[in-house]
Image (cartoon, rainbow, N blue to C red; front, top):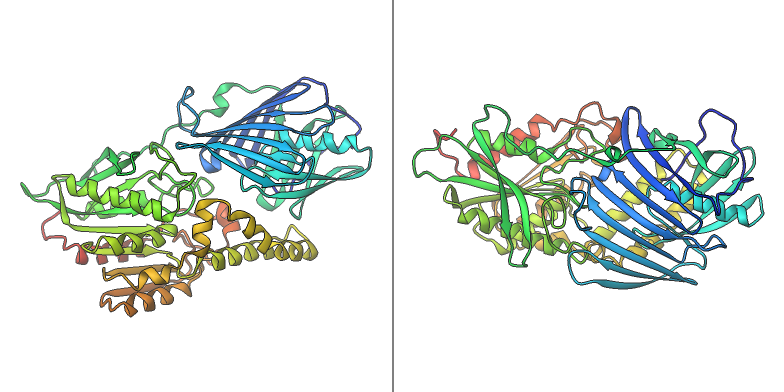
Length: 530
């Protein structure tokens, strides 16, 4: 959460205190008519218990935060589930953070052997579990205890391990500045947050004193085939040599000749935990790989799309995994396709988006018999360069902050990136050079890119094309599509901060058509196949 502002009534300063009180209720974060997150909490003198449904990332998070009499937090235990996990399911990740002076000891268990990390913070830092509003009450209570109208409270972000300052000012309003953005809350005289707003993201905070369990429930995603589709959609379980299994959907064309086997592709999602459709909750209705699977299966190409390791129905330890590990999951998907009697194991390909465009060449370098790989917004540069651009671009375009605030955040980018290196995936991503791998790949390659993409810029497409051709690869094609963003959705601006306001979430039909035509040729889809 970056900037919250008041709505409606006059604000009360930090005159009240919730210390020692029992308080329970529910915070709701909304964008227009859409609910982004719901948090239910219970606060006693020394303990804050919270459970949140975060719809934008399809996650459910709970935590128990111990609060000392002086307002410091010596310990917090957080637990993470997928939003669709059953009520009695074991957490996918449990993390215990113990704060001792300026040190934080993090003990993390996530589907594999527990990890212990020792992180440097600041004395008295309050752990923050984004986007908890209940934790912000703890921050404001701590500020009140200083007795000053302005107080600086150190915050430790449990996701990423960064420490930053929250500046709290009391007056006609309660203003909190975190990472360069102003936050203002509607308060009552007991020191409780009653509401607020995030104007830069068009988000509103609401509080109620009660909330039923239904507020934290979500429907499971539907991966079935459309009615009367000329293909079937089968739920499958893919074994891996690493010992975990991957949940997926295999779409199989109907009406093939007896004993005929069809070609197939495996889809590869972008960075972050993704389901098999690569659904993005902030872009309502966006399901890139469902659209691709539907189009390809209608013309005779089977498609295997899988939930990422540790996400949805898939198992495995994601906490230690890198892009190279995810590449091995994709190879397991290829092996599974070769075991299916309906699939021609000699006619297989890959379709990867964003990080999937990094992973596909990794797999092709080891699976030389692939007939083709498609890179949708694949990267040509090392992650350090990409992340520096993305952060600078985001900060520079954040008009909710002053020029001075933006300059300060830009100046802090190197330190921010350096702090992320403790995460295995990020450490690998920052130094991995996609062009080195591209120069080893002889598989036919199709590179598709949106011209307005401000996550993976369009100048990277010709760089990738050159690298593949330098390997002596004779079959490399690159196309850049005007007015399309990183999602291959119509967006003349392309700035990620505008994704929630896109008029349509439909993937551009010309992109899907170009992808399908190219694969029909490379996978040799035979005449008469539906």
